[in-house]
Length: 251
Image (cartoon, rainbow, N blue to C red; front, side, top):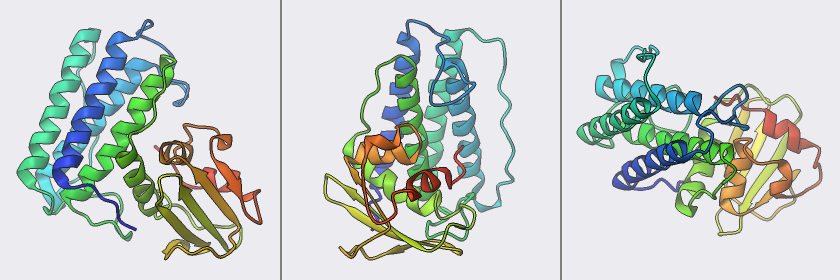
């Protein structure tokens, strides 16, 4: 099922979650707190990463389908206040580029071959998930994690299955069907084979593994921000859970 938010809503969520990340970093009792969900990172590293990612996608959206990927270079030696200001400016630049291109503009992406389009709208959708998860990372660093809002979490699960599972290496653990069921209602059914993951029309037939819980918990578990115990697991083969969570390569 496709739960993509309308383009203006995607832009609003990018803005809101980027600002939430900066507020958490600015108010952190320890400005260099360890980010437990991102091994080796502290809060300044997290903020810098999001700045780099948003600059990258600003360039991609502006250039369109002909974009040649390259890592943006950031000025070093800035104060904490300057880094926060740079982050805010970068978010504003990204939103300006997205608005100028519109939702249907052609855009380079790293997900050709999936069911996700190579458009500005799809890039915006992914940037919502990027910054929503990293805003949660910042909250974990200060010991005040919050749930991802329902509409973002539901859309994030759908996007994760298309992009993260859709671009993962071949599934090597034998054919299996996996169901994801949210307490809010939406359900997904995925068939795993040597060819990868394929979305199926949801049904109530027996599956190898079912993950169930609030949409936020399911999304954060898929992103390895919550332990597997954060969701309810049933099915004929619960041993698939750690294999499934370790399957996609997450940035």
